[in-house]
Picture 1 (tube, rainbow, N blue to C red):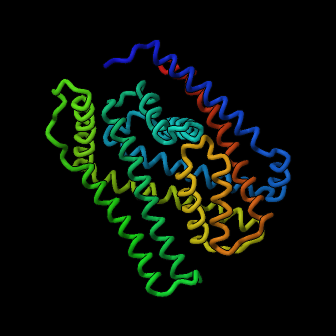
Picture 2 (picture 1 turned 45 degrees about the vertical axis):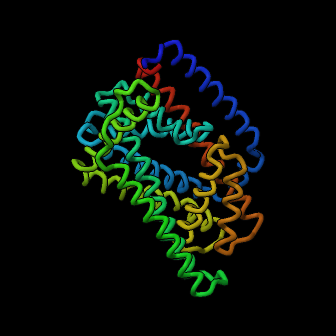
Picture 3 (picture 1 turned 90 degrees about the vertical axis):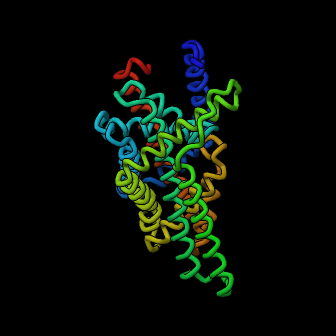
Length: 329
């Protein structure tokens, strides 16, 4: 069923107004009186934080770029970076979270010489690979935590926790393999809502199946880049804690970052994850033995400051994008 243009315009207006309203609440909840003192405290080191997050975002873009298969040559990496950043920013302030961000990616790529089916497949596969790589790193960091930190666990509990962690990872891998297997017989001809939905799902699964068979190297590259995306993103915690006088291992930083991301995922329905990220910061810093209240506040304020910078960058990217893509505007 084709959606009438008037409904698309209404949807855009409602989306923009809701994001503006949520952004207003977000900025109201940010204590700007604490932001500048915190940035002065780390000085030029704040530039290193921005550099690490930019590199992580760029690696995430390259992961998605490889998921476009042979049609990736029809869009530059820099333009894809712009689109990805705009959509991820919208996802941050949208109750639909990453689902809303991924739908917007499909819309924003429609003006490029890339098949809609290819775009949809790339978005789905990249999201799956991002989640899979995150689960993989969570399993690695959880194992490192159990084996290297004194958590008061006996060896049976340690082994049981490690086995449970990797069992979850194995189940996720089995689910992914099942998803990209050959689709079920097409039942889209049935004149029921379920039949039409199942037919649409089968078309997507067919595209996933073809991509997984024809572009296995691209999938490996995309997964590797997704892992690097998370690892480089964790440098933010490493740099922050170093600048604030705490000597930690890179694995500590990765552990904290993965934990905070899991906590944020649990509260993804909360626009901007207001308060959720701060709780995650406090929990994970305590897990690696850092319980200073002043440090937790400084880290939370600096991470929020970094976030504000990239939110504003997303707004600038959107203005440039709409000026150069009249079809979308």
